[in-house]
Length: 347
Image (cartoon, rainbow, N blue to C red; front, side, top):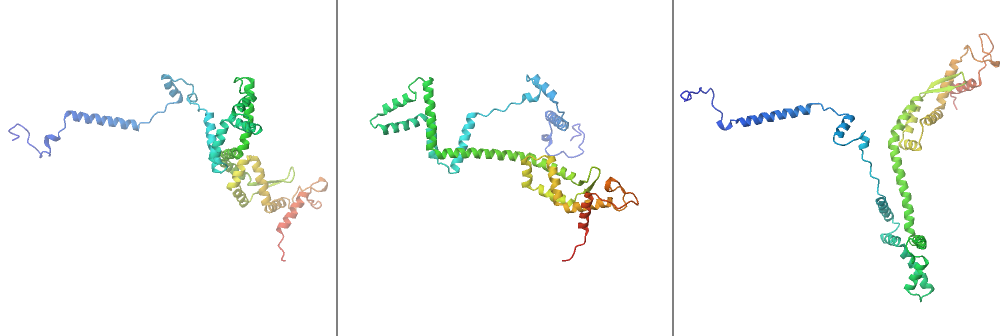
């Protein structure tokens, strides 16, 4: 059939689907473009990005109308806290503290706030009660006029008389408030102390977070310097002994205990002062062993026959000359040596 149509004979059977599976030129072009786009994206992801320097970034910003000599100038300064909001927040914390501690109740606090905001009414109420007690015939209106006249409230606001009267009223009101709401004022004082304690704890916490690692490092450095103990007898005579590692380890373990480490950091130690204290503590704890080692070294250095040990009169011994005359420091070390090397006696 294909030969009759002038077509080449088939070498294999056509696949299922036939012409329906054939791609149009538009589909082929779309796939090619998609493959190119995918390859381009992968190349971009695999390429190393070059970071711009600060100067280059500032120049880019300048092209967009943002001029700055450094990035510090671009930082937005923190907005200062609103004093009114801080006062409101503190009042809320103060109220919560007093109520939680049972220092006063909500009704008492509401009365305190109302009287505080109406100082004049509070003072007038007392003035009215005292006036009525002295003269029951007085009317409320008469008492009101008398009160205003006494405290300059009948004068123009801003005048000396009016300002002086308001000041007197506020002074009296404060005294009345303390008498009426003593528990609340005690709670205020207690809260102030509590605030200081909280701030101190925050400060100590911050100091410990930064100071404890430094203390551990300083301690390690100081103990490294304590591995050799210099003992000086005179300006020209000294020995050096190795510190007992077990003694150093025991002292270091004690210093690194949490409570002790915190105490050192909060007290504001200095490395030099720390070294002096640890040196003294190590000598105190390990004196017998150190004294024995010093005595051994000293006696070995000045054993019989050694030249150069001073004689009486400041002379030095020569072969065949009189007996050795030890110095006072040597005498002490000899006694220590004898004491630590003599055999134990049975009881």
